[in-house]
Image (cartoon, rainbow, N blue to C red):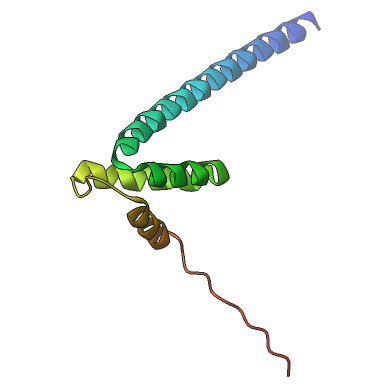
Length: 110
């Protein structure tokens, strides 16, 4: 039985080590992603007016995934040189293009 216990202990130690390495890698990936998003936000903030930036921060608070999508698109526009300054009206137009059209469902009684 002691040999079986020894094998179990080694297996458990190996699994714990793998789990710790995996958790450490995930934490590093999340930290790196957060840093990249922060850098991108700083670049985008320079292009947006105060009103547009305020609208972006409201979206970020309400829907973080959508905010990341918006950041990515704005980053591409800035990188391509197609945008120099974005005011609130232009930002609204961009948001309208990104928002899918909602289909209205009507129920009729027969």
